[in-house]
Length: 337
Image (cartoon, rainbow, N blue to C red):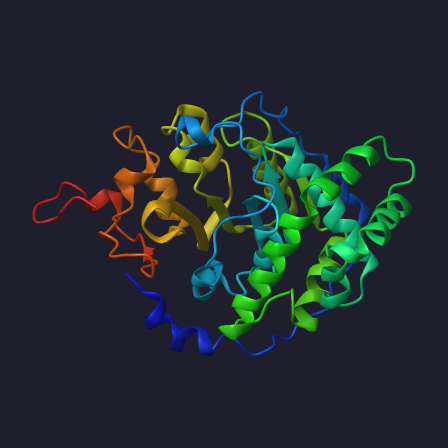
């Protein structure tokens, strides 16, 4: 188990501006596979950890220490799958995957990625990208959305998403950048090389926002099949705290089993702790161990699997690594996780 203070020396070795290879254009045959897998229908109901959170649209992330995962996911390559909105671009620059699936069951989150795409492709630098979210540049930003999607039937939706959420997004991105820069963590919001990589991944067609529901039968399984055809191992799976919304059911287990994980694969997740630290608990787990855990019918939810200590107060943000092998549970001398 790690604490942020103990990670500073580790993070220091990860803060140099990285070198990126050029992102090659996606060949047509691979493009057909990558973009051709099926999507799930948008969710009829947005779930939450309690009834108070049901129906919320997470247009911005609310995890404030994503850099705690950096030592575990840096330069993994392969394939990235993750829920959410702005988090996706941070992880894209850190994981440096060959393919990235930005998934969500909320159609507004999926649609918002179209706005990010337009702003990334229209902006040469991190500062130019960020200024499009600033209040003074709203008219220019709307013009750029219109310019990029002149014949898209969802143009009105893109513009409404921008105008309704611009303030919160600008606050989120600028605060994240300030926090990461203060901690000397390289990120696409301030580092030109990382920004260029993220931009080129989007430009090359290697980033696919899509409607995929962790509880439905098409989206995740389709990604797994596409990854296998592309010869790509999924090296990073970001779940945020979605696992707290429901018990592990048969379809969810099938979905995770369908993904081609390998020895390098990392699952990164959060567990709610807002009432104590106004943030989350951060956790990581080797992907193959996660798949092994999901084979256990007695595992009903994430909190059975992830060991948690008592948080001490608002400054206590936990990062933990779950490495218990489920095959060892119950053996003589072995404790429960």
